[in-house]
Image (cartoon, rainbow, N blue to C red; front, side, top):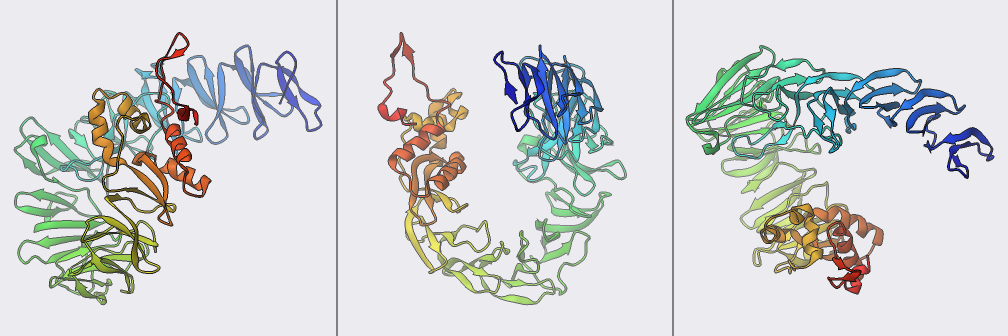
Length: 560
């Protein structure tokens, strides 16, 4: 791309000869043999010969999706391919940015306001190839992306209200979507599949949870009572499985689970019971129920004899032998598919699916295999073994952190005497380095730690402004700072040396690790300060009046 003395742009070949005249006020580099050009506020797309593939008549053009162009014709947008063929006629009010799954919001009608808000439009979904999967006919279209943490739900994804702004990116693959007549509520929403087919109508339930195994978990809430059930996507029938004469906010238990295979579990005053997809009660009388998504297994402890029924998602016995299992912990990673921690006669050990003992029943507690390691507890304390039963960490500790990767060098262990955490080196089987009040697992060669009595200056801008808008926009900044003080600490490296002395906010760990990798050795005090200055640069400000500083800017604050 070349520009003449008048600021007009064109294109030259490798020898410097102008091959496309310098006629344009706007021009972008060629990509895949095409370039976006413009003049007098109009844009088009040319090929390497300078011929227009997409005519220069649009107010804006940009590359979008899989070799497509998003064109803006005034207040309408559409899509063209690289041959200039119209993929989507410019009749839509908005086509959003694609997400990692290759889908985006698309709207029709209404308007895009100057604030980037999308007003009074109908919503749909388009793919990266320009295929409209969900025709934009819904005033309210939502994703199942709201993680549920409250005790009543416990698991699953609820509908999240659409932000309705042009920069909003879809968070899911759009396999299931909620729809409603109103744009600002998920109440009594219906459900669409990925192709826009209505699989559950509106008005069935107050709240719905993302479908699982062909069933939708439903909550019907009233002022002084609740009804719990499921909607069967195959039979298109609603099934009530339990109720409670309390308002929803007064319920203090997990009401019912998602379906996994043929079954779901319902919690009732009489205990847990299993239901099938027709709502029939098929197993009952349990005081505890667990499920492993990876192993696809249910285990439920009977009220009568405190022994667990263990069966797969089809209802078949999971283990080949009829064992009196009191409790179980299943693997959640792929490195130990046929090893299961179980409790029999009050002791924990490990068996395979054939019911054969693989690790002796010598433990007070045992977690299911995590990668290639197993956390165990004896009378002496917590420790770690490998999948063969060999000791990795001696059972001498008050507590121990679960590993987040295979064969980690360090485990964080809690010393019984001090109650503080120390790194246990599996290479020489010793706890070493400083003790800390709070620790987080090593990742990418670094760990975030908080020493006992760690000093956090809540008056320093380099501390408070690390909280970003959470602090800056808070009405009660003192409370916000006090609530977050416990998340300030330092970064240590794989040699257990302090890499960044902080005080560093936990939320900035990733940025600090990236900086540490570039430096390659512990930060100097100047480098530590430079990092904190960089992290707070958006929020620190200094007042000036008549060209003079009202706040004194210390010389070291200019270091960044």
